[in-house]
Length: 388
Image 1 (cartoon, rainbow, N blue to C red):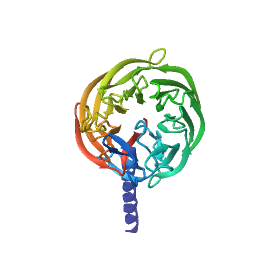
Image 2 (tube, one colour):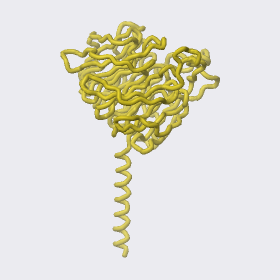
Image 3 (cartoon, one colour):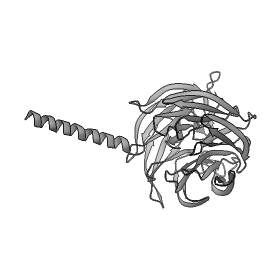
Image 4 (tube, rainbow, N blue to C red):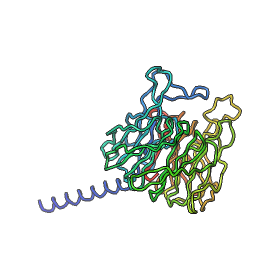
């Protein structure tokens, strides 16, 4: 009897372990950074009285519906593209860049920050384990697919910071200086093969091409010129194209995204597509068949503005080579920010600063349907999953 009991216990333990393993294997982490010091007042980004702490929310995007795993304090900022978060390919760590902080000399204003929080995603619960310094005003952040290198665009000093990654240790390894402090490096994307990076510069409307050899990063001095104020950027999973969203002149005009062909002798912009007012974020689905954009759509403007709207837009396009074809559009909260896909391409998250929430949408290849909401502390303004 004792023998049978022990075998039953062992069998039960084994089944429990398999069940837990299956859950872990199915999990997909999305990391949202949330600004506690930014609210809209008649269309103006304003520091509230007694601002709340900035936070980071770790979400299981593989669950149905997606669910919050943990939320904790970490500095961040809505200023810059919603790509100030990067998740290592193996989901071991995440990096969160903080562009602005409350001005220590005047609590009603903000001042440039330089902090990058290193988050251990394997800890139970996940938590900040280190803080490293980038250049002034860090925003767009990206890992290479090997997880050994990270780049951070520094909007306020015209540079890109280079970091070596060894396990969960992040070490500064130099900077790329574009020679123009006003160039406004905003976002950075690293090609799937790890040999190239593209850096948007919304200060002088250029996209810089960097070469990468291991941990050696150099400015090729070659540039691309497409839309006005290039902002969020991402490579397709296959690395055959990249897509960049343009912020435009903030006058209410319909803004664009540019498609960069990477298969020729050198990268070049080959198509431009109208999307909406102020294109904020861009994200490819994991299979590369679709691409999603968020557009503020006038929702962050003063209600008296002639091009004010009461919602942001989530737009999905089908990808065919360098051609983009619109397949679905949905409205969500105001002052829209980041977007992220589930691995299976059936769920999307879209951030709303005003709602302090991430809208959840289901996608069947043709339509977007509202599927709930995830509330967070602070205004969600940066969002990434592994592989982006």
